Length: 351
Image 1 (spheres, rainbow, N blue to C red):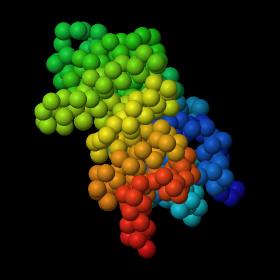
Image 2 (cartoon, rainbow, N blue to C red):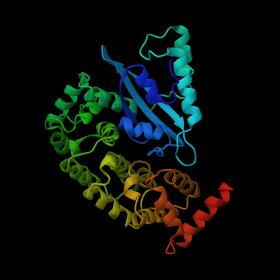
Image 3 (cartoon, rainbow, N blue to C red):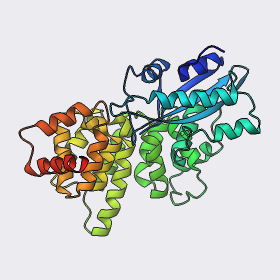
Image 4 (tube, rainbow, N blue to C red):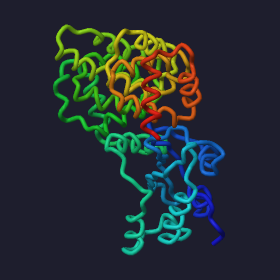
């Protein structure tokens, strides 16, 4: 077997068909060309999560269309580039266990070797459900049996509280097909009536999809309906709902309507910590301009939670598209005294 230097070469050498997904912050299909550039450190990994790159690799042989799945977590260096030693170690473990045939039935010894691979991981269940739905939809495989029951639920205007039979896989199958038939319109009409037990997992799936204007506007409308409620208890509940709705708009956060919503939020006098966390973790592209990011940081320092500031700052500075804007903000002469102090404390603790 020729020398294998990259995961791409490993897949190609096994004559596998394969699809690649970035599963770091959201689930996004990526091209083989982009993956190779990330592998060769020609580009930083675009969506770092706690210092790691997370990928899903679905691969199969032509004669057997049922894909195998690797869920891969590799460390990054301080520039966001893939740790080449870790990547090479991963390849060595796979080659030792399976050789050139990645889709062979592993024997007990091979299975133990694969299980002990430190670079394979299990994401959260909601992410696995969305990933499974995306792969099945893209490979034109049948969805789960739960899709039909979820569509029936959305079509029946009299049974919103009868959600117990709905499977999360049905919700993610529906969202993976949000641009099929009348799915987007159907959800837009039902959205404001959905109980939390349905709405929250639905938002977790929507974060991975580019949405229609109609659905974006429906989500924004429900978000605004919860902007101000009288009692503290209701306010906490409203914030939780808003947090999920904002998350649902993650992949559409550069759409003009969502961009305006986020600008308006950042111009408010106060903003809940939960929404600040969601903005940085899910809608970071909306913060990739100096005005928005500066407003965001000013909200962050008013919380007077230095630990929260440190964590979010350290996270955002690792994101390639936001990193230069972060440095622009900390050098800006118009930054507030509170922001300057928070930066000073951050660097003091880092020393």
